[in-house]
Length: 80
Picture 1 (tube, rainbow, N blue to C red):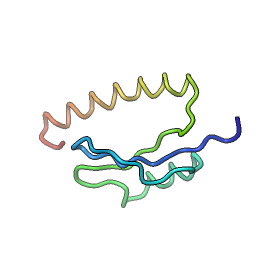
Picture 2: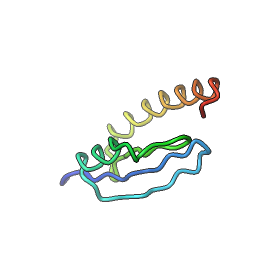
Picture 3: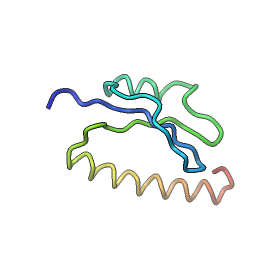
Picture 4: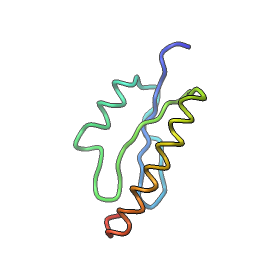
């Protein structure tokens, strides 16, 4: 497979996520998400692979479990 491509997803704590960019290299996606203007109160930008392998999917599932735990803690704190 040629180089993987990534998309940027704007994650809203309300759950209404949306894709805002696609076709980026990993480096471009990471650079975007590292900027100060890619997060705020109630939202953040994250990236994901557009054409994931089975291994990528397994890693994502494990990551999502961790994210859900973190979001639950933020909700308890009244942040999310």
